[in-house]
Length: 424
Image 1 (spheres, one colour):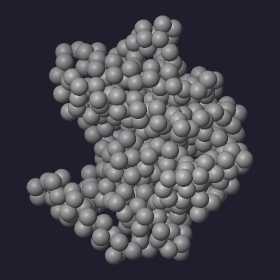
Image 2 (image 1 turned 135 degrees about the horizontal axis):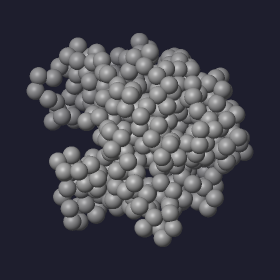
Image 3 (image 1 turned 90 degrees about the vertical axis):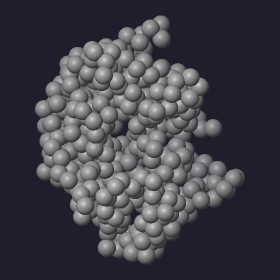
Image 4 (image 1 turned 180 degrees about the horizontal axis):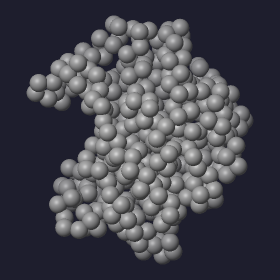
């Protein structure tokens, strides 16, 4: 499986395609099946299950090793409610297509002996605000690019898609519905596209977003304006009511990756758990949704994670801290890290802000090195990769316990069924 996973990523043409097909065949035989988390989230919306927050883990770099670490921790802790995801932006800088990513996650599942529902999610399929504002052909091309990405993801086996048009919310408008109008219309258009492509018998879980992470905190009024508008527009487009989002991403005070201080440490942030709890409650009580989603959380202190299940959060997205664990680990080769930072200095120089220290600049830009240094990191000596996997596993063990998903295998398997996959 190690060799197949490597070929699935680095081989070309027929050899690569054959490796990917073989991995999918092995996964099917092992009982690994891609699935939508919608039935579980429906049960959360009805109040039948709860007390946990599903971790959605972004695997940017060392994809095979990191996915293996997730699988090992999940197996050890009897975890069924865990999502593997990759954002639109991450696909670009980590050089991972939808099909490659899904295949590598399947390979890691087989390698570690995992079986059952496998949740793979397209995270932040986000509208570029500048391209949207340009209007005309530029706007049409941007929306078409997201629709093509959705199609590729579904073909690869993704059964969970997060739509993010929060970037085009206009807070200068007079009323909340007017502020959310473009978000509603574009989100409904993309959601209808998802529904048109989903396999028979499967309801793909769709996530919406009302507040751009790093911006102004979300409100219940924004939640209702978005959801009422979305459901009305989906009903109009479909002739019969289409299923709306199963969850809603909001802003509560965090920012993606955290805010690096001059010495490279991360500034403390204060999450408004009251907002998270209230919007989650509204989602369940008024719309039958699982609840709200917290982004930008991985660099929070550990004592914050117990509070997500208590606040009724449906899902929490985690990325940067796992990157930090790998790149800052004592076993990670210093010469390779220096080469990655030199690449940042050369290729990302235009992104450097006035007065920014090297520590701040490298912290903010090093995520973009995963693609250019993909092979070097993938082919690190096994002894080093083993130490990095162990460090990641230890963190997953803690997070799974704090988020309440330990022992969630049965509740997942009781509700979630496999989804057919027809790959191009």
